[in-house]
Image (tube, rainbow, N blue to C red; front, side, top):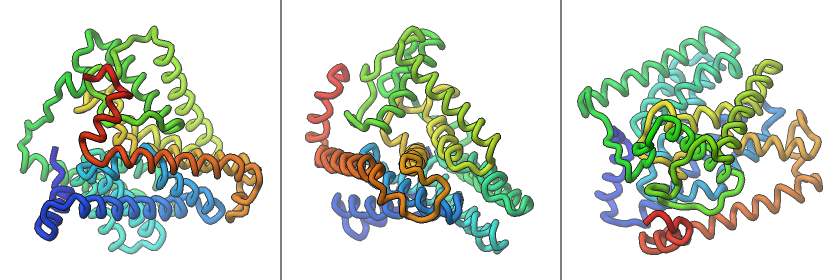
Length: 362
């Protein structure tokens, strides 16, 4: 992997504060706060003034969701934070260019996207979403949308050149069966079925974020086949999501619900282990960007519950239906996040807590 930006931030911290975990945690919190703000600003631009409430609730849910504990509490996962932060800064800069045609905004967007790639390669999800966003949602000017797309492809091309120059053209990550048991699957059907099961587990953890585990490697998720009912349920769920997104887009090319689903599907696809194997079978940090799409869908569900679809402002938050559902849900999510944070005190505390949840991973 070639991720120099996170390494540079760690090097600066070490020079200024030496080996201080507290400093690393502090900056992770700062970067995470930046992610939440960048997400809100972008969603508010994307959905328009009539949906500012959705943008706010989605960002708030993103801020408190327990599945993000690993990304923020684990100093190493700063690559995820910076990839997300620079990715959404790029989207915001590109949105500014589409609106006012300032070339500096276009250049800044390309720079931010390059920094996102240099933080973690999964910035590819942002690059894939860019044509979808700027030709369908923020499509005031096709030429500007094309310029944004070209800028994003240029950022990706420059990243690949830098990566090959530093690592060499033939460099690949070494995958082991211990970290990714899918490598030892006896056949392609077992590998794909287990990968689909893992996709279902990501979805379940977003809906019910318990139990959370720091290590999903050896035997935590046993290999399975298409005869497993949970594999079928996961496959049906993802097919339904894809079908719903297509249906909604056919009716309204700027549908917020469709965007939330597409954001989730595109982001999680990179970690699906279906088109290609990645280093790990599963990790909660892999759902970081995808969870933003889930939070958009959940925010829309809260507004639908209040019967305020299409209404600008935050009045729907005061309705009894929303307060009875959203408030307890937010309190529960926040409580689970606080409780999970305590597990990340140190390696011993973390592994002691997680060993009881994944007893077969020994």
